[in-house]
Amino acid sequence: MAHTEPDTATRHLARRVKEVRTRRGLTAQQLAEALQEQGVSWQRTTVVKLENGTRENVTFNEVLALAYVLGVAPVHLMVDPDSAEPYPVTEQVAAPASAVRSWVRGFKPLDDTDPRTFYTEVPAVEFGKREDHPERYDWVWDITRYLTRSMGRLYRREDGTAVLEVELPAGGRDDSGESGEAAER
Image 1 (cartoon, rainbow, N blue to C red):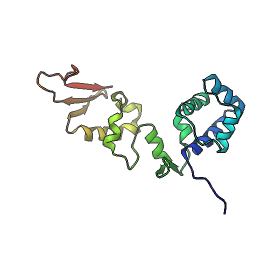
Image 2 (cartoon, rainbow, N blue to C red):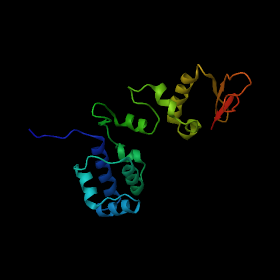
Image 3 (cartoon, helix red, strand yellow):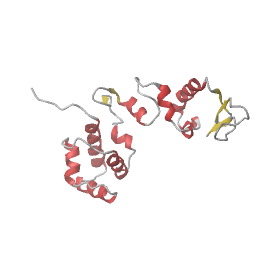
Image 4 (tube, helix red, strand yellow):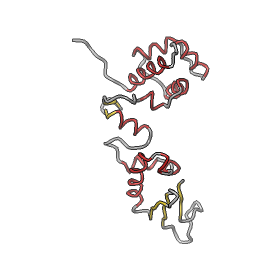
């Protein structure tokens, strides 16, 4: 019986790097040289080791440089856009590739993640107008309403701007000097 290595996020990345590199018409040597120009000290052998599975670790800086040099968003290297297979998030957690892509993009938490925790780190500016990403903002609007029930009144103006009205301490300003209406664009 043949021994197979467990599937990992790095193996997915390696497959995607090879696919995109090949589609771009680059050799392993050319990719290594392009990475060197960006300050990543990879050799042709480093590219080959990643692609054949003998290099198991890639730093986040290297992932960003690979994406930059190959001209793709990092998410497209990390998670195959056409995969229907479960994606190994950790050794114990796998999720559908489409769910992982949404999670990596910051659009939607994975199923076992508390949405109240997940959305606390989304910058207000990324709750922009619905027209920017309509598939995202339908559920973002729903979760924003849910999260703000105890904080004040949330509504959307005709121009698409989301407004949260909150009750502030006496004097009408909070410690930061902000007034009671915060608009997100």
